[in-house]
Structure formats: structure tokens, C-alpha cells
Image (tube, rainbow, N blue to C red; front, side, top):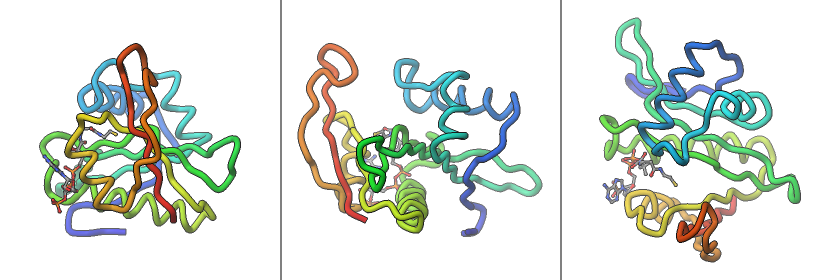
Length: 158
Ligand SMILES: CC(C)(COP(=O)(O)OP(=O)(O)OC[C@H]1O[C@@H](n2cnc3c(N)ncnc32)[C@H](O)[C@@H]1OP(=O)(O)O)[C@@H](O)C(=O)NCCC(=O)NCCS
């Protein structure tokens, strides 16, 4: 799917430079604690769904955003979005919403019935995006990612 210089891609193959590129993006956009590393990114690519929004400029293309999803072991119709981000210089242009729409479409087409994710209760841009998109707050997961690192668990019916 293409929209001007933006298009979407599910990553299925990788080499060292792609993984190195994603490691940097993870750190820049999620911070060092939440960033996936070289041992985890290939696992999501091979066993989950690694969806990107790409930015094309002439012959150059680069990753503008990432949505990483896995299947719930206890419910085969439920996906969990592990990471979701848009690179800083492309934020607030509607790309996050488009990536979410694209990812939800892929998951729906593959038979998923719901998506869950967690978000920092103080992350206003992400919270607004998810609420506007139709995600509901399920509960607060206290100390989910460490002492004092609470998360809102949110769910979307597909
Ligand atoms: C959250 C994030 C993915 C949003 O992506 P984005 O491309 O900037 O979002 P969009 O431009 O598509 O905006 C979609 C909606 O998000 C909300 N939003 C986006 N930026 C916002 C901001 N700075 N403040 C408040 N709401 C904001 C709005 O509801 C917006 O809809 P609107 O334009 O109709 O008001 C992006 O800010 C990001 O990558 N943040 C850092 C990583 C992160 O926090 N990821 C989420 C982890 S759970």
C-alpha cells in the first residue's frame, strides 16, 4: 500500500545492517530500557509480525515507524503489540494512525479478533492515539515493567 512517499512493509528477511538500524531506532524512540536488542528483534521478525512504515525519498527508503506484534499463547485470536513508534521528525503528521490502521487490517485479515497493548499512563500522545482509534482501557498493570513502572492495558476489538 502506497500513499505519496509513505508505504508499509512487513519485514520477513533481514541482514546485519537492517538489525543494526532497528536497534538504533528502538533506543531513540523507546529509550534504552524498552528497546529490543539483536537477540530479540530477529525473534519478532521470524515468529511475530514486524510491520514498518517506510519513507521513500528518490531511491532512498528508510524506516519511519514500527509496529511489532505477537500472538497470545492463551488466545490464538488475540495479538499483542509489543512496540509501536514513529521516528521523531515524522510525528504528528497522521502517520502513527495510518500505521495502526494498516497493522489492524493485517491482523484482522489473518483472523485475529482483538489487539492488546500496554501504555505508560503519562504518555498522552500514545494514549490519545489509541483511545481515538477505539482502544478501551482494561485495567492498570501495576509495576508491570519494574518497580513503579505502571502501564495501562488497552484492548481493541477487530
Ligand atoms: C505515539 C506516537 C506513535 C504517535 O504517532 P504520530 O504519528 O505522532 O501520531 P499521529 O500524527 O498519527 O496522530 C494520531 C493521534 O495521536 C494523538 N497525538 C499525536 N501526537 C500527539 C501529541 N503530541 N499530543 C497529544 N496527542 C497526540 C492525537 O490523537 C492524534 O490525532 P489528531 O491528529 O486527530 O489529534 C508517537 O508520538 C511516538 O512514536 N511516540 C514515541 C514512542 C511511543 O510513545 N510509542 C507508544 C508506546 S505505547
